[in-house]
Every structure is written in structure tokens, then in C-alpha cells.
Length: 483
Picture (cartoon, rainbow, N blue to C red):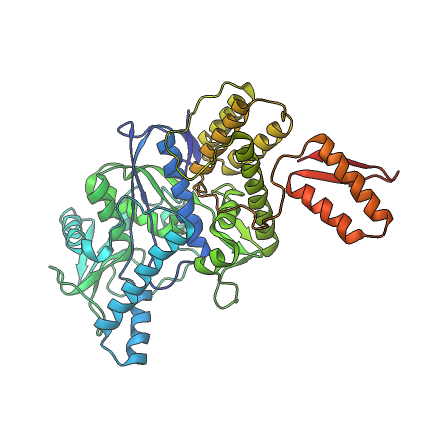
């Protein structure tokens, strides 16, 4: 039984999609005014893992991830470009928009995350947004003031059910821009009247552009239907964005907008919020170039998706060591099976004749079925390492099953390309036997007696890279164990 933590009910619930085995899934995408940062990368990666695991479990998943390509931040950046280069705002807006759409797709490629099945642009769906708003006006949930249209949140009796706060407390501590056109200060804009030198579109309400919240309701409805199975995003979107999506969608359609709401924790750098003003803003391009996509993904996997994630150089160095250790083990398995693991995730056997791997497979499934517990699921990789190292006398079939189980996990976690092999060409990548390890320890002891500590340390490092840990005892004896 698969369970998902539902923000709407604040508990884990058995996953029952509306039309099994089909799953309609919508996640909030990026606003294209800058390069993606590592927080965006976490969101993109989390929901890719969710999609892959659902498919692995037999569901037919359709994922829609929007691209917000009209927004105050995009317009402000376009105004800067217009002033700097002496071009029209229209041309500047197009250049900013197109540049960062291309940058977003480059970031997806660098991280090794597939595109969603549909990635609609907000500007391609404005006629549908206008129609949606017209129907809300007809039902009395929206009203026109000048060239603006606002949503009456007090008319929607369930407003606040996602964030779990009373309607009059929702904006406590939040700055509200004064707007004398609103009937109620809490109402939000569905359509914004055109301002000078801003991109705009024709509508029955006059020239203008859509508010932010309306685009997701419209595109989710257009491409996935009236009720989603899963809606995902960061915890920072619960209010007001997702709260407003529910209000406008359910007010019009009179059906649940989404059965399950998944929200991931936010990302910090060294315990502080990521900000350009603090000098700790890290783009996805910078992170991948410096550490590799695999290291970044391992860092994302290390914490449950609902928990906050803190990035630090120390954490990333540890993730690099994890990557290298997996790479060494994969090469060791290949030498035993005479079969390269490759990057093709299709047709991997899911049945295991050895109880060790059957049990570990069950452990992985149990972890992932429990609200996508990636830290526990990923730990099975090292359970496999341990089992193999304890059974080096087994047949080739044993190692093939270890290889297959490992590949299942790495494929689901989207690190199947396995660009994680050590770059040191002269390293011995075969699994060392007990005799070989003891001989290395004896050689190391001899080198230390001769004062050749650098050479002795190199032996320790070599063995550690192969999963062999040495411990020097007070008696002078060295013991070892396999990680």
C-alpha cells in the first residue's frame, strides 16, 4: 500500500488515484526571469523521482509542469534591459523571456531531469484564462473594478483549508499592498489592468495581463481535467498561491481541485536563507559544474522531501565520497558479472532468487511506498554493498542479482547514467580478498616502520576507496572491516 502525506489533511493517506492506473500530476514550475537556483533543482528532482517511482509501481503518469513567462519580475528585468540597450520594452521582454526559458531547459539537461509530459507557457493560455475569469464573474465569485478583476475570497467558504488558518488570520504579519479598488483587502487579482510600457493582452475587461494564481488553475484544468490526483510544489507556495488555486478552481468547477497535495521543504545554505544580497545564491549551473549532477542528486536524496535541506561544502564533499564509493562498487560488480550496468533502465528483472536481495528489494519498496522516503530507500544501496562484501564466494548469478537491484534503485533515483566512476586510472577495481587485504596491511606496517608514512597512508586510502576500513589498535595491531 502506497501512502502519501497530504498537506490538505495533514496526514499520510493511502494513495488512490481517481482513475487507476492513471495518475494526473501537476507541479508548479519556474518563473523565467533568472537562471534556476539549487532550490529549484530540488523541486524539479523530487517530482521527477516521484514520477519515476509511480511508473515503476505500475501507474500511468501524466505530468504537467507550467512555465510562468509573464510576471512582475520578468517585466522589471525587461525594463532594465530596455534602458540599458535602448530597445523597446516589447523586444526586451521577449529577449528576457526567451533567454531564461532556454536557460531552464539547459538546467534540466545539466541536472539530468526529463521534461514533463507537457510544459505549457502562461502566455499561450491567456484566452483560456480570460474565459475562466468570465465564468467566475458570472457565478459571483469575481468582480470587475476598472480594468481589474478580483476574486472574493470570503464567498468561498472553504478558503484557508490548505494552510489551516482562519481567514482573518491569513495575512497576519504579511505586507498587503493597499488597493482602493478591492471590496476586501484580502481579495486577490485574477486580471491586472494594463500599465504603461508593460506587455498586455486584449480581454473583455480591457487590456491587461493575468494574475499569477489563475494560470495554474487554468492549465491544470486544460491539460489534466477537473480534478488532479497530485499537485506538488514547495512549502512556500501553500499560501497564498495554492490556497488561491483551490479557491478559484473549486468555486468554478464545484469539484475537488486535487486529491493529494505534496509540498517539499525549503533549502538553505549553511543554515541561512539563500539570497543574492547575502552572497550565498547558488545557481544550478554553478552547482552542477562544480560538484556534478550526481553529487547534487545524492544531496537531495539525503533528506526526506518534506524536510528542510541545508547545503554546505562539507555536505557536498561527503556526497562526492558517496558517489565515488558507489562508482567503485559498480566497477567491482562489473568485473564479477562481466556485464556492464549501462544506462538503459528498461527490462530489469524485478525478481530475486537470493533471499538477501529479495529482502532488500522489499525494504526499498516499503521505504518508497511510505511517502517517498528517499533517505531510507537510498540506504539500501549500501545494504547491497555490505551483503556482497560478506558473500564474495558466491556465484556469478549472485552478483548479477546485486547488479540488477542496484540498477533498479539508481534508475528510480535518476542517477542511472552513473557518471560517478573514479577518474584515477591505475586504481585496482576488483574486490580484494581477505588475503590481499592482510598482505596490504602487512606492507603498510613495514612502510611505517621505515618512516615511509606517505606510502603507508596511500595504502589506507586505496583500501578505503574499495570499502575497506583500517583501525590501528593501541596494541599496535591493525584490524579491518568492510563498510
